[in-house]
Length: 542
Image 1 (cartoon, rainbow, N blue to C red):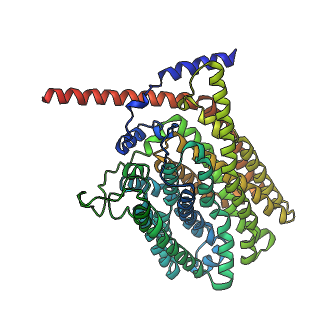
Image 2: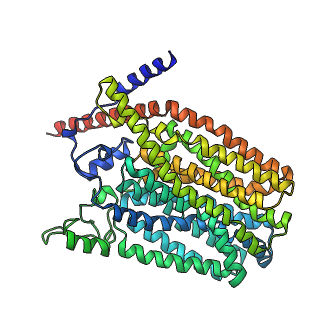
């Protein structure tokens, strides 16, 4: 009986969803951008004879790979020097708490910066913003490699985060531009996974470099690696922002949005169409029509908030353990800097597997849910309308398993260290932890991109903002928590919070679609009112 009432309620809500005739939809990039701002699903996500993007599958893989390696620098920059915190503490003659502040400030700006850069990318395009972010990042790493004072270390860490942190949201924006819901999970899994496994592999790289070449070599390594990537991006990364280039068939409007690859592609394949001689002269930069608070407005949507809370808690728990791992292994098991770096290998492998498996599992489960929905529509004699498809269930239906694994791994890590169980046990538990955390964060991030498909950079910036700010608080508190509660008590609390946060997932699955329908109806009514008012003003002027 309860299920019947729920179906009736869903039916009433679905009737509120405004219907749009396909013949009335013009493939105009500007209109698609306006539809995106209203929070409605892009019509390009609907089945149509025309492909969603002119890029081939091989080209999509290459584009996503380039952006994903950029996102890798955002996450690797925090933990890459965790193994040398004791060394830096002695070099700068400061306390452990002062060194942890440099990690905290990075996490804070890792959350704040994407709100700015995400808005810029929606206006100027993904390509120019991506390149500028990496230029700032390279400059900050040069400063870090040359620093002799703690104050300079602090400022450069801030600048480092301000530059590179947005590569995660920009990568998600690119994925949202060139993919549909059917294949988005696979690409988002790779993008988010490569961006997150830097948290796991960073300490391995940092420990190896510091033990052989000194701690300054860590930042020179980042300078060299990022410089190679920026050259590749300048040459090959195409502009994908649909408000500027549509599905990729529109030639980039400005010089900074163009690349050598697109020029050659246009010459040989005539896609995008080569510009004619009578076209308007190209500007160097596109017009800037930024709305910095647009992304923050998503925090007022209940179906967004209930996704952000569990995502932030699972991410914070994961990173608190990775941060405490170096100190705990050093104090409890007398690990050297090199051994501390190698201890993160298990976490790195787990994170890598999690990134690879998440996309495949999300894609398989999504297709299963689609087949079930199509069968239900057939049984009811209704046409298949993907706007009424429960994407919340399709994405979050598998979230219980990685969440439970995060809880179990956190408990094992904390209590085995407290009771001095052989160090191999807590180290192996970080492998399960990283696998599950990467998987879980992928689910949350992909769902928000699905809800706001052409606003993917903005929605991902909100994900970064929430999880990084909470993570900064967790990093600042983890040492005091371990000192007062011991490792077992400290991480039991975090495991408990992760377990309780699954209640928000239940709310999202049960009520998320209703909230989504109401938002669409509300924004569609507002758009209709504005259109009516504009028409009335035009008639009055006549």
